[in-house]
Every structure is written in structure tokens, then in C-alpha cells.
Length: 57
Image 1 (tube, rainbow, N blue to C red):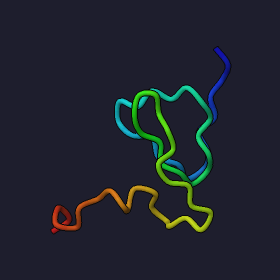
Image 2 (cartoon, rainbow, N blue to C red):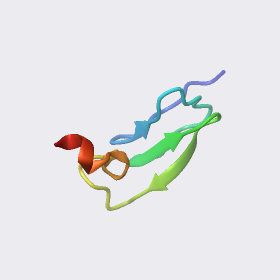
Image 3 (cartoon, rainbow, N blue to C red):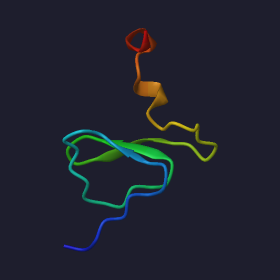
């Protein structure tokens, strides 16, 4: 098995099985992990789309 690279500012979901490199500024989830969002103009927090604002109160 070759080394896997997780790109800068990327997020990997809990229990995801990463079998390929993850691009920078992307979110990888699933089994096997696939990139769900690739954003060249990434926001500061890669998980911002997945956080429920109601939980932050």
C-alpha cells in the first residue's frame, strides 16, 4: 500500500476510509472516501457547510 496524502485545509469525515489522495481544500467522506467538495476559493473553515448554526448558541 502506498502512502496517502491529505491536502492542506482538507477535512476527512469520521470513519471515512481514505484509499486515494485527498485534494487540498476539499472534504472527503464515505467508505471508500470520496471528495464531496473541491473549492479553489476555499473558506477559512472547510467544515463550515456541515455545522448547524443552531448548535452554536
